[in-house]
Amino acid sequence: MIADPLTKPMHILLVDDNPNNLKVLSEAILGCGWKALMATDGESAIEQTEYAHPDLILLDVMMPGIDGFETCRRLKANPHTQNTPVIFMTALADATDKVKGLEIGAVDYITKPFQQEEVIARLKLHLKISHLTRTLEQRVQERTAQLTQSVRELQQTQLQLIQSEKMSTLGQLVAGIGHEINNPVGFISGNCSHIEQYVNDLLRLIHLYQEKLPHRDQDIDELVDEIDLDYITQDLPKLLASMAQGIDRLKEMSLSLRTFARSDISSKIEYQIHEGINSTLMLLKHRLKGNGVDAKRLVDRHRSKIEVVTQYSELPPITCYPGQLNQVFMNIIANAIDAFEECDRKHSAQQVVAQAKTITITTSVDTHKETVTICIQDNGPGMLPEVKARIFEPSFTTKPVGKGTGLGLAISHQIIVNKHNGQINCLSIPGQGTSFIITLPI
Image 1: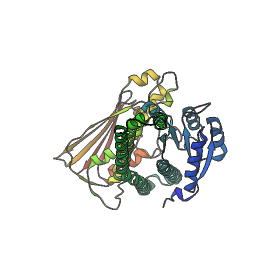
Image 2: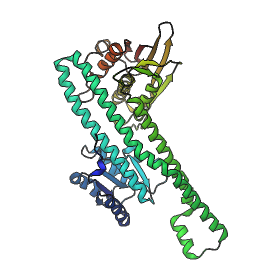
Image 3: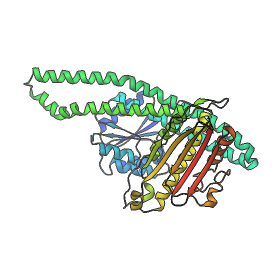
Image 4: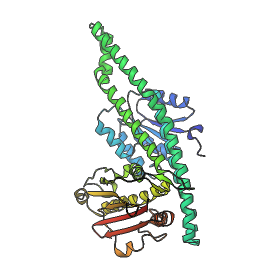
């Protein structure tokens, strides 16, 4: 069982040049049983992370000296702090600035003036996600070490045991993450509709006051100017709509996690292949998005967009192990993405922009042979014949040390051929791309 990270003291680093903001936030954090660390500028915040090791950083954008964006860049460039979640606090309403913060590496943003309840809810959510991510990485690392030793001793026999245990662990971990996401999402989603209604009611009340009492005294006029009432009236609905979109995105991710982690290992069930492919694409969505290319900067810091084209035929459900098939789809598509990213690193920024990257997934059914076929094709760099001849061998990999174990395609071959009595073939031409053709009995 994964321990709840919120049951032990968390250290939250607050970075803001406004003492009042620090006071309000620190009181809210202490009220949750967490410990508050404080800094008033980016330089001191970076210095403090070196010895304090906070679990999460609340970072103001506009500060004297280096601003929040530059502070975040330096934190993400440091191996010791690159995995520490950063949430921006900003009064900037421009979507470009918010997107910029997320691209730099922040996990979320909170718009000023903030509500304590919203801040605490978001802190709890990202602390849990961070804890689950670290736990997942630690378990995967431990499991990988065990698997490496097992493969050396008895490759083919142990490969079957590796697959069973890997799918079981993956299913439990992914299901746990989906469950943990559902709890805060359900809480936030349930309250958003009430918040929207309350906000609309308050805005109606303010408008009615303005109509009935057109002549306000000087204090009211000064406060209206100070808080920029017109801007608040326009921005509040936008903020609520943005929150609703975020909640919908989390719900989609949770559903995809549950679909992907179908670990029906004990017996086969009827399953719609398209559900597995779609859930896999959802989980890989963050790797398919581009983050822009600047010719003046290093290309390997950037990732160009990969377009996915699905050409689905009308498929009947097939009897299979869903979780294992989803693992095959994940291995093949992730390998295609890795190949594109490696290609990006080897070419100039202009070439990265010019070459459109595409993964095409086609499905079809042969009613006479009672089989379905899934073709996953990319227009990437392709493989040399000597590499293609060995891709299904256990422990064979062309990736750098630490980037791949060489087990993905070997396990995929075993799942398709041994577990499902199907076929998996690879066609590849250097410079033109690679295709994996999977045929499964209905």
